[in-house]
Each structure stands twice: as C-alpha cells, then as structure tokens.
Length: 193
Image 1 (tube, one colour):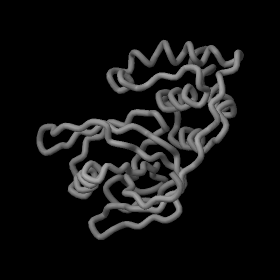
Image 2 (image 1 turned 90 degrees about the vertical axis):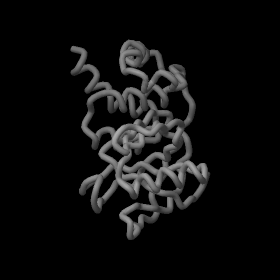
Image 3 (image 1 turned 45 degrees about the vertical axis):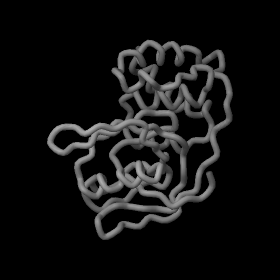
Image 4 (image 1 turned 180 degrees about the horizontal axis):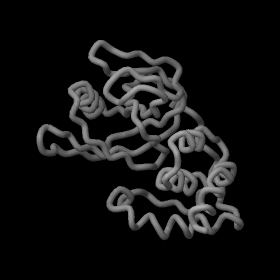
C-alpha cells in the first residue's frame, strides 16, 4: 500500500472495505476507466460526492475506498455491468479532472483498523446483521463473512442501514470500530423500537 496514482470514480454512495459495489457503466469515460482497470489489473478509488453530480464536475470528500473489479458482463443496450469490492480506505492527496472528464488522483492508504472482537454489549448487532444480510440478494452471497471482527460488523451495518450519506461517510472516516458502534446504536435502537 502507501501512496498510489489511480483512477477515481466519484459516486453518490459510500463504499466500505469488504463491501460489494455493483455498477452499471455506460458513459464512455468510465467504460475506458473500467477497461484500463481490467487490462492493468488495478483498482479504482470511490469517493462520496460532496457537491455536483456523477456526470459532471464534482467536489468530493477526501476519504474513500479502493475498489477492485471482481466480475463483469456486457448488459443490454451498451451497459457494462461490473461487481467491485472495497479493499482498503485511502486519503485523497491530489485530484485531477482529465479532458475526457475522468478523475485521477494521488492517494495515501489508511492503515486497517485493529481486528478486535465484538464486545458482549454489542452482540445484538451481530444478531441483527445475520437476520438481514441473507435477505439482501446476491450482493452479499459471495462476501466473506467475519462476524467476529468488530470493524467488519460495523462496516456491513453502516452500508446496509438506510443512513444519511454524511453519516455513512463519518463512519468510514472513523478508525475505531467500537466508536462506530456508538454512532450506529441510536439509529438501530430507533428503527428496532
């Protein structure tokens, strides 16, 4: 890991390490980006859009996740359907919009969170996650499950709960899995009460 120069895909979503990212790509600039990633066996950075749209100039948050394409197929009407997975978090150091509208950037990887077990007082979050993850279709079918890792549990809950994007981004920027549970608890209690 360390510092790298990679293609970037600003989106109206937050990707977490270990999380699935299904995309339908149709814009020529992003078709070119996907082709490059597949050809060179490299990932692309996913950043939440702070302002702007996915089809024009954007301002993004600085913390994102590198995605790796794990599967793809040609859909109908020129759509390219890809499945990517989050690998690791990064901090954006430099962003450049090229003439074709694609973004590239220099990123610095963020160290993985410590692998710690889910404390007893948060075991109900594991039960909640297990009760819903199977109902989410094939997005999580091939996802490696690690219910013993507090970071993994927190990432999955944050990405599947219908939280505001800014809250998901705050969760991504945290480096403490137990603090992430603290962010989620009020929302989980409100929805399950």
